[in-house]
Image 1 (cartoon, rainbow, N blue to C red):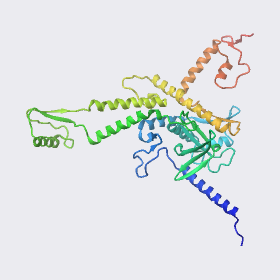
Image 2 (cartoon, rainbow, N blue to C red):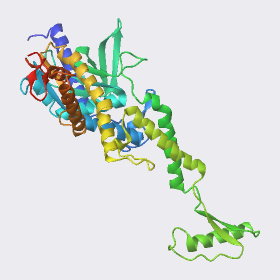
Image 3 (cartoon, one colour):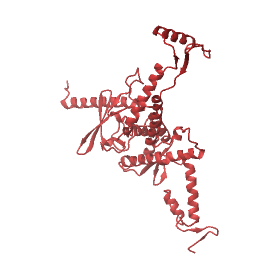
Image 4 (tube, rainbow, N blue to C red):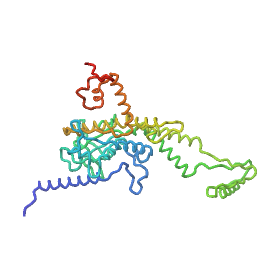
Length: 410
């Protein structure tokens, strides 16, 4: 009989360990959600305390709404692959971004990337367990909350993904790391919610206070007042008789008959309770401002404001110009640096904004201004084309005077 050598045993152990790592990571990739829950039987219980923060996406309504608005609108854009300035619809790079993996489509790739970006300040793309070099065949999104790292010599030498008790090592060349600038840790992103910690906690306390008020009916609907002296048992008797005849469980619209010297005074919320609503309103606008979302984009309109349709269109256009487009440009540059340039590809990727209705009006206005400036001699056709990132014309540096269409140099 042939005996197994020591090397064969070691190789078998390594293969078995590698198979376990692949199985654990594949299980992790198949099912993690944006919110971490306390347990399957109570998914909306008290949020788990994350390092230095809470899961406000789970516990705070307007954080959830704001991130939903941002990710849905980013999902409306199409990531176009170009080569030598021309759009391509074939090849391994196009196929990768067209279908990142068997369960993720090209729109959800950017929606989920942006969701993690706006929630955690970073997002991770992973090339999958079968990746062995070259252009990857798959892209998976990892949960940033489960990522740790090893830093040696001022650089990250290894990432570790934790799931179900397993720790999976990942090389830096196997991921694309989208991260917001972090003054406290240059290797990780930082959540945009860190500066809103007090506002979000205040909202939580206000919600709890209002919930207790509604749940326990802490403020009575009214009081029975009399100028006569009554004993405790008489007060209990009057209260029971009033509740029986005119309480919440009795029929509505009854006529109340009160004895001599007794009157009913309805009560409203105390000024302190009303201040909670003002506080929540202030915090709402603070959250929207942090995420760069104009009120009308979130379907909020101040009762004192009288916004016209033009004002609403301006807010939607500003949302794209000053919030979404800078984020999309940032995503493009990160993908270019960590993916296209890293692999030495001739292809490039960019978001196509030509089909976004909110930007059409501003583009039409820009076209009219360009035409007027060309007619006045302030611009040439090539000036306009260069500003739009389009190829120039051989004759585009000559200004044509309007009317007789005669080149001025002749």
